[in-house]
Structures are given as structure tokens and as C-alpha cells.
Image (cartoon, rainbow, N blue to C red):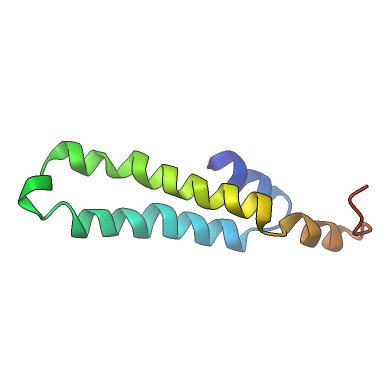
Length: 87
């Protein structure tokens, strides 16, 4: 997740990676803690800590999808003044 976010931010595309991180890490983790943890069967420390790898994995999938299909490279090339061809 951090590698994709850093690569995208390094190319000048900072808004989308920031929003993906905010949603994937903060919002999803809050949803996990507010929805699952209050239920008696999930009210354990292990389930609370489980929110970390789950939100990291989901956020990583968001970043992988955006990295390969988000069109960020085309926008980066346009900003740099390079031609739009892939060669």
C-alpha cells in the first residue's frame, strides 16, 4: 500500500492516494470498530486488532486497482509535457 501511494504521490497525483488512504484506513477501520466490536461474539481484543490487517489489505486492493486502471500515468505525462504515446 505504501509503495503504491508513494509512487503515485511522487508523480504529482496526491489527491486520490490521500482519499484512498483516508477511506481505506480511517473510515473502514471506524466502520469495523463501530459495527463489529460492539457485538458480543466479536467483543475481543483479537477482533479489534484484526481491523489493522483487514483494512491494510482492502486499501492495498484499492491502490492496486487505481495504479493499474486509474489513468494516473497519462495525467502525469501531460503535466510533464511528454507525448501521450506509450513508447
